[in-house]
Length: 206
Image (cartoon, rainbow, N blue to C red; front, side, top):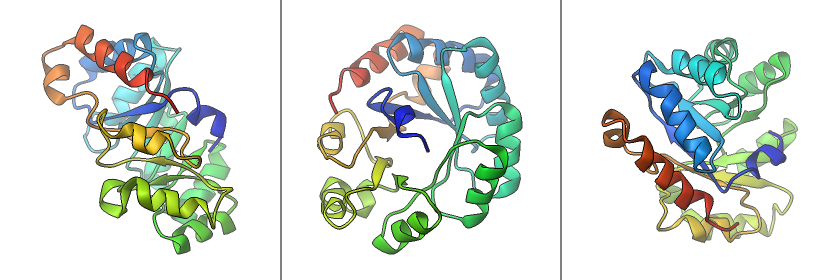
């Protein structure tokens, strides 16, 4: 995963979308608020269509597919237009798919053993998930000493209230945040509210 991509903004919004009609205005609001890197989780039947719609209508956005679990999903995400792929865990099959499609992969890893397995596969930029339940910022801080060359995007249980704890760590490039944009705001088509939330997140310091 190119670190430059994860340095674009301090927060990557992690979205669960089930209505293609809302996909484009959500992406437009996030980009306008300063968060152009967006992850769409493959947890709904409409997720792939949402990725395609965003890619076509909002070229300023960098759209990734999340919760990708196998090579079949990886291929489907790429065909839908995903520019990067995120997985909750590490799998050599996903690494192979990333290389075959030439699309960056951000796999999840928590323990030193998982991180070392990713390093053996040539990956030194990882997702720390689920962050809060796996020791949070103190755990990531502890990992920085023996593994200083590994960088993370922690995700899971992160909000505007605690994001700074993670972003202050030397081995954290950005955070993934599923709590940033509520389903109520999307359902209510509160595009101004979504942009305002994005602006607050974009103002966080790394």
